[in-house]
Amino acid sequence: EVQLVESGGGLVQPGGSLRLSCAASGFSFRNYWMTWVRQAPGKGLEWVANIKFDGTEKYYADSVKGRFTISRDNADNSVYLQLSSLRAEDTAFYFCARDESPGNIFTGYYDALDFWGRGTMVTVSS
Amino acid sequence: AIQMTQSPSSLSASVGDRVTITCRASQGIRNELGWYQQKPGKAPKLLIYGASSLQSGVSSRFSGSGSGTDFTLTISSLQPEDFATYYCLQDYNYPRTFGQGTKVEIK
Image 1 (cartoon, rainbow over the protein chains, first blue to last red):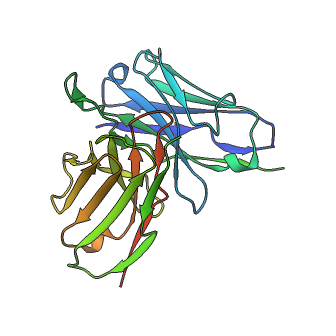
Image 2 (cartoon, rainbow over the protein chains, first blue to last red):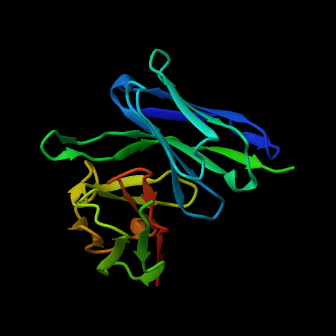
């Protein structure tokens, strides 16, 4: 059974840092892109970052570029999100998701976030 | 970044109704779009990828169509478990961007 379990959330002051973890199990983690998505309380979904299966490519939302860093450890089946220079507007539930990447070299590969964790809450407040 | 605009923002419908949600991209994105369903307090669920490919295990009453800038998610016969918020997500380029969501409520 595929499982994704986020951890590391909590209350942090503006300007502070936090490291989120997502522990994966039940699938061959090293073969999948992984994505972080967040959702502020009562708001919509916001794509945050993703990372290629081997860690060689990483992409970020404009709102977090230069402040957040995504990484992974395939030996540990985990993906991480380092949050720095935190602002009140970073307050949100943070979800990690597996990207199935269906497709082929002829059609191209699509994003398909097929399994999600339950999320971890980050609150930025003084 | 590509802007994704969903309409309507919310709708009221009855069980058995045919429901259509649209998503418009600020530039052409070929067919690189997915649809997700989210219920309160839960993680999103993938419904459609590649604009029209139904994710395994998802009911066939859900269908997606469109290409370029205009896309549609259709629920052929609304069921009680379909009351939720729906989001589109473009995967044409980076950064990926979601639509603002469409809340489907019970009439």
